[in-house]
Image (cartoon, rainbow, N blue to C red):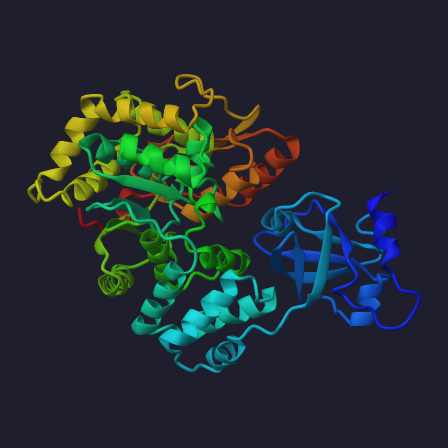
Length: 532
């Protein structure tokens, strides 16, 4: 008997419908709802009519002793879900972990217990540790609708969290989900607050530090608004989606990894919040600190080097802003027993030459191979960050880290360690000398003679994304000129790669509106703020 007929046998002829006694047939609806669990009911479903479910209401779906909370969408097309079916979006279906056609039950979800605390935050009230713990618990449990999540994010952004609230939020986020313990110290990590295209220093720092023998389990995110995250670029070279058992064994054997953090369930509330922060383009200081530190603490890190780039088109635009952010990171880290070394770096332009997964992987491998064509800025920044991390080793004297990192790189030990990590994670075909870039390209020339005095990080990143990065690994932007370079009219500033004519056209139109480059007199170049 088909699942539809089985379900029909339970449909009453009239009266109220008991949702517990009325199973529906589970159907996977192939829609990516980006970190939101969504359930689909047909408008003519007997349960929908009798129980009074409303669109966007929170519902509980149960199958095979598992349960999830989801936001209800109501449909009129039986091609999406039939009257006796309950549809689930991709994320929701994966969490429930059953097969298409399995029986499932649905009921109205109880109101999240932290809603009163959320409402107090919306009115500008300062929240307690318990308030944040309750809110984060409900967020991680998918008990909040997108509207409620948005309200929380905006309330925390507008009424900026004080430093104790940031501590409470960080602690709550780190405490929900899996928390790793490597049973040794130091466990080191490196993180950049983002906003600088091509900044793939982690893929150099990890093999350098691991070759020295320090434990560096680097779990990274995929791109949110950038043309590539560390996980996207590493995926060009190796598998990054590793189960925790394999990841732990790999780290203990090779002293490091470069994996996607999504499979580790570390600070899961952060992933949910990011799904709202991204379209809103909201990235307040407090939420940034809580997001970064909660992930590092949950991953078992004891020591962290944190990179804050400063520049006209970076996330942080001035030295006073960078110093205030550093103090906030230091305060919260100290409360969480995490040692943090905050480094303020040059964020005036992209780091390296390539922007996009394949092009960035090429740059990384050139540096590891000590190729003369390797981008100098990427090499030098990675060595300085690795040097700061090496100085977490109690046997390394302060100030000696940079020279040690350089020796590890130049000796080939870092390349050998990277090759070990790539093989252990599952190597993918990659020609280091002729990387597979996208099929089509066009060049963007200088429109005047002079010196490159400005490169807009945001515009260059936008052009790379319009070209298809990071979804198309070979798409992106390859820079031929950097700040301070003298150019002539018509000289190529950069090349844009795309796989599809439509994406090539979108990127070309964006460069026509604004190339992202400013050409002028050398003395008009913005000053650099660095603390190396």
